[in-house]
Length: 94
Image (cartoon, rainbow, N blue to C red):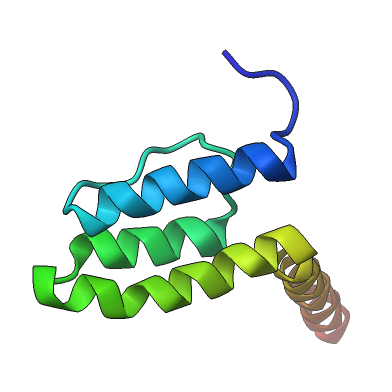
């Protein structure tokens, strides 16, 4: 069992392993430390036809880069904040 968050080096190893797995037609594992955007990109590859998988790898690399640079998390937090603001505005209108 892993405790805490994996390091960037560990995440890179996990990502490359998972990418190899999905390119081979296997599904990605869960609870790897990869974020939702990266996991969704890996799932898209695993669900694609064999001839289309390689073309989707670039999207997985972009998603993973967003995890490492924090832009995926920043977007997620901004979306969540927006959701709360919209919810509060609707509550005030009723």
